[in-house]
Length: 469
Image (cartoon, rainbow, N blue to C red; front, side):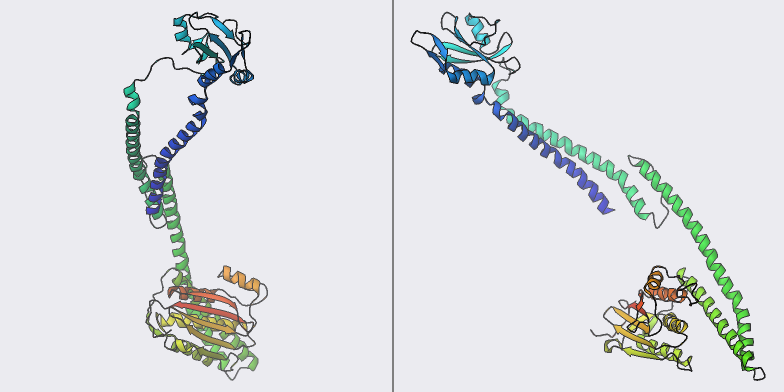
């Protein structure tokens, strides 16, 4: 919100700054384009120069020098020389218009020297006591013929300009304050509403010059809240359905597993029948675990699973998980090795023992599930000042790059569907959820021996730790 309002203020301030900049730029351009019009380079100097270029020959006749001809050509002008006393024209250029008089009274001279002769703007110079008049094209000059400005007005011009600039500056500042106040008053509720839109219901009064935007935000808010209610209703129904199925299927599965265990241990049955009973029991156990995983994943997703955090020693917890896993492997087809860095031996964190054990069990069971021929599994604990890394990898069949990409991008991806392989997905999803509950994350990849690798990274910043780095 503050950044948006600051941006609007900067925009308005930029508009204020541009005004004097544009004024200075236009003034500079005006001076540049009008500099050549200063009097020293205008028609008055040309008239005086023309008088100097009129030469009297031996016969007493006047003629214009080559330089004088160039002056007439440059200014596209004509020229006359009026004799002092008589007012007669005693010389004129060859391009003199027919309507130009050849005799002038004193009154006419006083008028023509500052104005026009037959609408031709004139400038005057002297040749001795005689008067040189230079006539310019009708569209060459606009002449100021009268004493328009008095001395006081010219002398006070700097003060008038400063007063003008001061009044304009004050007016601009007042306009800026009025516009800024109105804009901020209209923009602030809209910006605040847009920022609060993802988290809560929003209603903005539809007024000001952003009334249409406010109306659009209100419509979006209504739509989002409606979608949120529909989604919550759908997700509650799904969570309730999963919980109900998990509860309802538990009793039949327990009965199936119980009867299968009795048949498996019944010595009176043929060995083949006992093996089939064992398969039924093991597959029922997998179904039970799958239903439990589904129920736990649903609870973690909707934050329905209570998290009972306590101070845990990660080294002891991982050793317990490895020991429990090996106790369930009497044939020793899945040996587990455990390594712990010296710095991690006293690593502790605030966590839920049951959930963390479940995460490790899921990774170990994943290796067992995908390697029915057996494999070796290693667990390694590394710790830094703020994080602990649990690295679990096997030397089994591993995972292809395509499968790894799909598994990384889609947690519920069914690895190798259609090829008869087991699923990678729900168990690892639970591992991710448990890590997230503890402020951590999960990475999967290839192990150093080509097998499957899972890294659980936990945050220790809020935990009590005896690590010395």
